[in-house]
Image 1 (cartoon, helix red, strand yellow):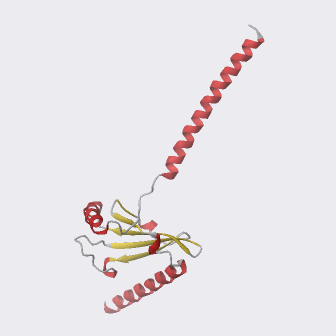
Image 2: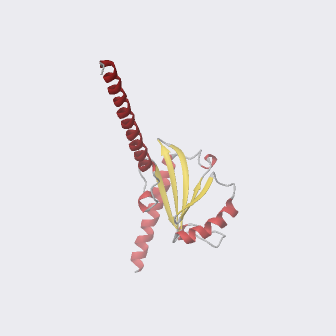
Image 3: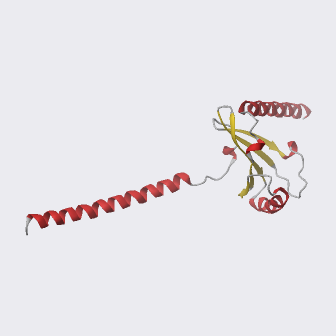
Length: 165
């Protein structure tokens, strides 16, 4: 066999091996991307203020009764921010379970169609995405003060409740 044909065959093997390596690497990258971008289920740990969002959670006692048959047990207002600018607002209505949220969702869509950028449901939550006009004049520092004020009121209620007991 000539040197040319051996070199040609060797180059052919390296091409096949290289192609397989690239294909395996591509599959690994796709799997990693799917795992990283997989939506995480919503739980209580999400409703905590951090460096990207302020969260104001209200019990059903703190919110005016909705006119519909399905009142949430909690309402979470999640303000996303950057510096002192609000970049987004999502309102999470929390129900006792997914079935109750599903029942409330249909009624909610009928009563609020067009008022929000988006309305969706995930597990026991109905999620409303507010239009920019609903928060464009609000500053993150204002929201932080509002949350601190509500925390103070809740602490005062707790002290009053303990004093009555």
